[in-house]
Structures are given as structure tokens and as C-alpha cells.
Length: 372
Image (cartoon, rainbow, N blue to C red; front, side):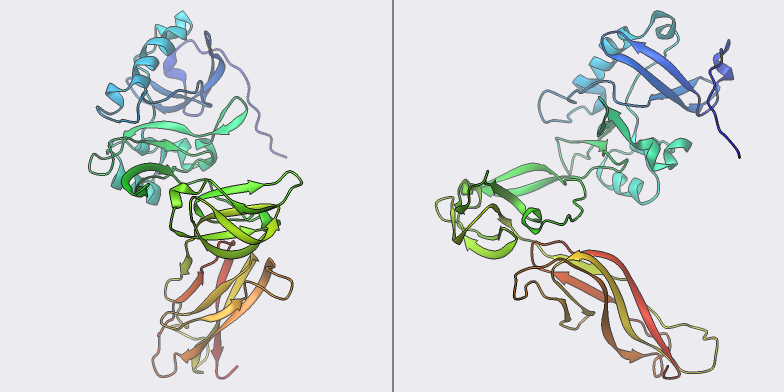
């Protein structure tokens, strides 16, 4: 059995530190923390704290004018945080700053950042290639944290990049909303992935929604929807789906419900890449794709079929006892391809226009060779 064990050692020279080494730092007024060496160069060592040391805004107002260099957070870091270091460590510190998108991400995530945030030209730290190393805590709980990059001016004058609680980048939007008849731009953030549970009454995929949860009491309507005045909203009442028009900031139901969610509905759409029959079959028999096998879990309704078709109703949203969560394997039949047009492929499209979950685990192509 191989055992990896950390052991404490005393280093005389900073040049002896290697990537992955940890040091302990007591910050006066903030607490005791560890920091890990992320990069070692001839000029020195780049350390990064392993957890968030404080909860701070980037600026007092929602602005990124001047970027990180002109931010209130930078001033606090360079003054208050620097002063909190022990004197022997502070004497060796050249500078303190936030990490950048380039240092944290690569691949598709970095490309997404470059499209939206100021480019930093940095390379990803080797340890950050493992997502779990990008996850941080604050006071014992998962926490997002700031990055140095401000959003591009043509996109927003308000936001900075940050890292989400699961080590991924977090998505902010500038959304045009009409509030009380006036067009306004709102800064909104995508909530963390909401995996489906087992209680339909608590399941809702809605935009700009409000929720009522009665403490043992049921309600026959929901108020406070003034921001959606005149709009048709999707409503889930104890898991049952209806649509209502908001009037005077309220909606009414035909029956009382313990849990009510009301908001703007949106459709879930999943489209595969081309699925092809084998290009070089093992035998000389003709081959084709005959169906796609869908693996679903905790889903209520779903239409599925080849692109261009209306789609088959794989799952119905309701049966005799109301909506039910289902899972398992479901077949979508295709017209045969491959005999007359070798290499012809299909794309499968899944849709759901209800506010329930559509949880797709896998989509597999099922082929036929020589009629078998």
C-alpha cells in the first residue's frame, strides 16, 4: 500500500519551495490560513490562499470603472491585508492581488472568459487544472470568490469575473427588463445548477418567480407579482401546472395549494451532434441507424425526435393522478439511413415547455446491420 503523507519541514531559502508546498500564515484580525505555492520563477514564488480570507465587495457601487487597479478591494488588499501579515513574511511580500481568469481556467471555460472579460495573457496554474483545487471555503462553507478581470466595456460597466462554489466560472447577465412600463437594465446571475429532487411541489424552473409556502395553511392565489403585470405566467400549485395572467400584481387559482411557484416559463432544448452509422462495418452487410435510446431521470415531460420532425411524446406531463417523475430508457424511432446514403446521420432534439425538470443522462444511437 502506497501512502502519501504531508510532513512539516523548515526551509532556510525561499528558492527551495516547490509548486504544491503549503505555508501557514496568521493574519492579524482575519484568522489563520494556509497558502499553496502555485508558480515558482527566478523572481519569486506565487502563493494563493487555500480559502477565502474575508467577505468584501469589489466596490461600494456596482461599477468596474478603472478595473481592479482602481477598485476599493485592491486598496483594502494592499493596505489592510498587507498590514495583517506577520512582519517576517510581510518583508518578503512583493505584491498582493487577486488571481486572473487565465491563471484559473483553460479550454472552453477560458475562451468563454476571453469573450466577456478583459484578457490577462496569463497561463493556467498547473494545480488549477484540477477543478477541486479551484473550489474554496469561507467560514467552513463553499464560497465563490473574485477574480481580477473586469467585464469588457461593450458588455457591462458593472461586473468582474469570479469563481463559483464548485470551481467553475459564474455567469452574470445584463438583462433588459420592463418594470412598471419602464425599460431597465438589470444585473442578474445564474443560480447554481438545480438538480431535481423528489418533491414535485418544490420543483420549479421559472424566471423572475415568486414562491408561497404555507405553514400548514393553503392559499388560493399569489400576490406580489407587480413586476410581471399583464404577463402570462406559468404556475406550479403543489406540483400541478397551470397558466395565469397577472392582474393587479396577483394571480388566482381554482383550488387551494400548500406550495405555489409563479414566474415566466422557458423551454428546455437539447440537440445532439450528428449521429452516424459505422463508416467501416465489420461485415459487408448493410447498416443503418434505426432508433435513439434516451436515458432519462426524474423527468416529467419530453418531446423527442429527429431534427425537422415534430417529435414523439416520450413523456406525458400528466396522467390520471397528475404529474409524475419518471426515469428509465425510452426509444425514439428513426427512418432508416445508411443503405442508400452511406454515412448519413441524424441529430436528435429533445424539448420540454413545462417548468418541470428534464434530466438527460445519455442518448445512445441504436443501429441495424443486415436487418438485425
